[in-house]
Length: 261
Image 1: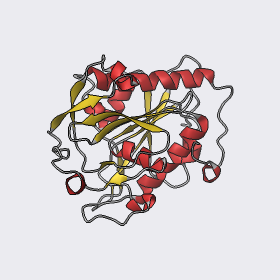
Image 2: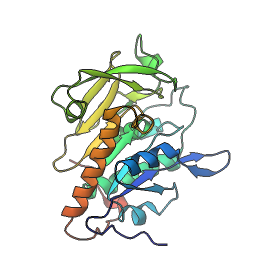
Image 3: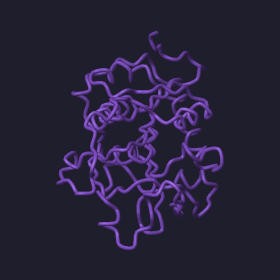
Image 4: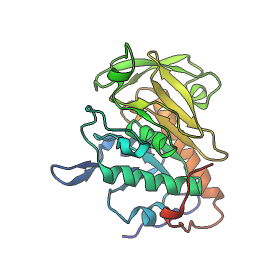
């Protein structure tokens, strides 16, 4: 069945980039992502890591979630040699994210980057990453344990702080060994862990919703209000994009789309 553009007033269609299990050659996505999008009022659509389909699929979607991944962004994409702790890279996932972002920035469709997805967003905007937090940040907190929780401090006056009810800090989960180093163009830091690790970013782009969070709100939305709000705001932005789009999107070739100024 072909995916059709959503009618005005319908729930927005939200694309979610898949993961890849190379041992079984499976494209997959934990169910938490789709449930979080659906609970916020969107319809989740998985984006498989298949060359040549992103352009055709993305034009039918109203917003995107760049999901987490068991892999790391290839350091070659930001001009650095590979650290020994960078054990897995999936070029297909890196390229899928790049093409999704090219489309999203060209059409000003909303984007939420989660964990790997936030790192991918930062690299797309010509930022760099700490390839292994313990090797580059002194006295770093535990960020890689799936059971770990640590505080993040909000930047006053940011949208993230407003969504958190202006609470100065809150506890989040943490499953990552990399983080933003040099910030990508057009991004600003809106939350940090107490060890200085960047935990959330916002895009400073006119009329374009761009958010990245280093934690996993898809696992927390039922118990933690900010994590639920992040998805709600994504869906709100996707609905607004669809309502104000002058005509169905005719996607330009992704190879010809530049990055935002």
